Amino acid sequence: MVLIKEYRICMPLTVEEYKIGQLYMIARHSLEQSDDGEGVEVIENKECFDPEHGKGQYTEKRIHLSSRLPYWLQAVCPKVFYVIEKGWNYYPYTVTGKKKYTCSFIPKLHIRILTRFEDNAGTSENCLNLPEETLANRIVDHVDIAFEEPSEKHYKKEEDPKFFKSRITGRGPLVEGWRQTDEPMMCSYKLVEASFEVWGLQTRVEDFIQKCIRDVLLLGHRQAFAWIDEWHGMSIDDVRMYEKDKQTEANDKLRQSLPPALATDKAQETT
Image (cartoon, rainbow, N blue to C red):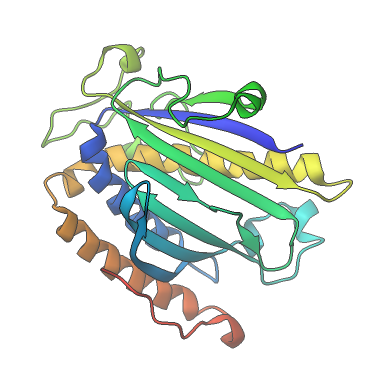
């Protein structure tokens, strides 16, 4: 059975603001996390079109993970391990892994993420228009960016919403009950489907995948808020230029430490 979780992450922002903040956060976060053959390599980044959702942005990335896997999984993985992520961003609706993520050595690993952003406090019960079967099987998990903390390795006091106050917007610090009292308020609804059809490892791997995704969502959304004074006021053209520059830096940084066979020569396409 596929493990299905719907994460709801509230932010003291509007959906329109988060359109910029998310792009800034992903670009900067990816650069900071790329080192020693680990991190995110952007293969493609270009405009796309969908008959239902209209214009969007397509990205293809290689997520290099080898040393970040738990020891019990490293034992069955090759030394060089990466996941290919394909995403279609029709903001405020996005699809990651429209059919599935693909893995460098595990053909039976399937991950799909559906996302919608709404200006509310996580109160929509089916904003992703899920069928009854999925609704019956999903686990709803509310992620609190203020009162849950990332791992000690990734914790920074200056990125802690309990202490951060925005100089530009005046928002923060976030206090107990902030999701019920603060304005503006938006929510990122993310449905994550993970399946790993290998006997003996299925439950353990599916739980591990969900934990990894939840950890990334917690850290990334905390950073998007804590970095608000750096991206607030940017136009979409500004943040796309920033994104392009950081992707180039991250790719160069990552490829220098990859085996030659994996250092792809494919030029990224950006808009």
